[in-house]
Length: 543
Ligand code: G6P
Ligand code: ZN
Image 1 (tube, rainbow, N blue to C red):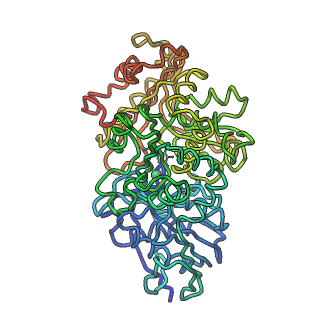
Image 2 (image 1 turned 90 degrees about the vertical axis):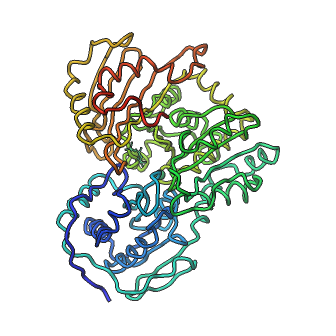
Image 3 (image 1 turned 45 degrees about the vertical axis):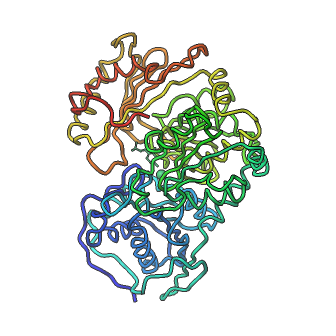
């Protein structure tokens, strides 16, 4: 029944910011997925007889790997496997199901916002029993194991039926439970938010447009916005999850959700536009005529969360990744609550959430979430916005501008240089590192460097230290530029340049963003020598 299969290790299975991500043909090499899944199991202890959750975002190769993972989980001794119907679970729904059914952990198959299809991206990630991504201690152990693995275990039975909801005993005794992917998640959202208030707002003619980008949130969004909240049919677009996301890049930003963006900026725009990514953990928020940056969105949600039933008791604290703007810090300061600055990657929030130190977390990369699960959550962010809009009865534009008036505005933009030669990108970072000691005191146009460092995080809960998490150059007066290489790309290197300037004066809150940041953009170029080192005249994406 159980086969032990000899295998040879691959040397390139190092998990990045969010699990192992590679092109589909890489995953299709003999035993490639099996080696990684067995290495996950080999790095864990005490799961015999326990439950494993398995789900993915429905992208190309999802079903094949789910079948392998189920057979391997059974062979390795898990007592129960929970999968979403059709093998589909959004990342936040998977996190919720791990928590709700007290599973030992979960395997999530996704490459998030990266394109899908036969030659595009695939990914495997392991989440622990709190529902969150495995911490570095575990991902390091998995990587070490992949380099020496010589056998994996797999049960020898026919593919299971993923499309029939219900329980089955698999040969060998493991219980397979296929769940409705949407039900548990929707129930959780109904507990956290005032659905009647949102329903009422919509019934009064408030128009929403949600773009599921042909990805995993389609079925969730249809159920929640149209069926439960009464938005007219058609309010949720591109709601059929497709293995190649319709050939698009399922990344909810003004560049990849351009149609929605243009509609929201046009005449007769809906009141509220939103989108989510491939696996449902990111969000894009656009009001009529105004794009809300993820950093501002985090600050505004944190400042108003008490208007939603799930957060009426206030927040214990806020956490943000280091490159995320300091807008949320100002909210935390005013409220006298904790503020935590972590490295990029949702996994760093897990300890703070578990310890009750932070309630709401967010990242500039379009992720926001709370202690309701241990992943960022796209639909959660959209629902919290709708709850706030329903209670305040003001437009997105009014809420954002009032927020800036109260707290000041953090002008913010990210410039990405995608597919850069890896050596050139590493050279750029090494060069920056070598300047850290000499930068303070130097001036670039009107900006004078106050401090420059390579961000290191000291986790206040488990005391672990994570170094080299991004080069920060802080200027006098609160402006800054951060340089980091992406940990999620699959071809070449992606250089990210994060630019920020604080403006307290509300008469100066209406400057076009790139214009407002022009001095910092120029300083970043001079300091990092981006053009000549990358051979690029301009960023590939500006958000
Ligand atoms: C994933 C993680 C996020 C992180 C983002 C950064 O989406 O879940 O927590 O912020 O990657 O991506 P990057 O490409 O900048 O490493
Ligand atoms: Zn994602």
